[in-house]
Amino acid sequence: MHEYYQVWFSAENEEQARNILVTLTGQKLIVGGTILGGPSHFWWKGKEIDMDYAYIMGFTISENRGKIEEEYVKVSKEEIPMATFIKMEGNEKFLNYIFENTK
Image (cartoon, rainbow, N blue to C red; front, side, top):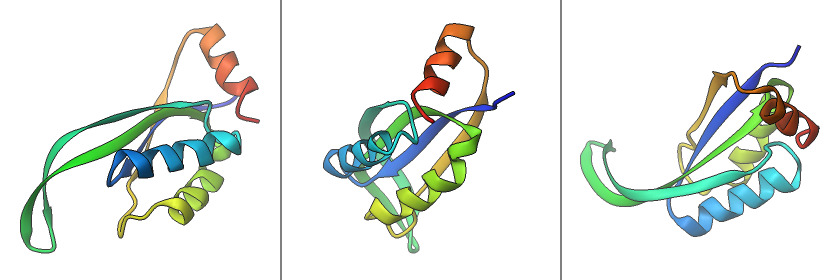
């Protein structure tokens, strides 16, 4: 039985996010994704930063996790690329769709 993940990736802007998304879907590592963006506030190198930021949210199977991390780090322009893998459940048709399109 496969485990399924909702995945989140950070990007400094929408252009970088699109490049990450195209790379990961092109290799069938994630089934697809949505780019979300907006204002962010965080600590960086001892300072509080306000800037617009982008995130990609997508779906994959557990077998792809190592390769996703490897490819994401290669294509990301960030000093600290942030990838989050959240185990998930879903209805059978959706999970089959993810499995069939990420192998």
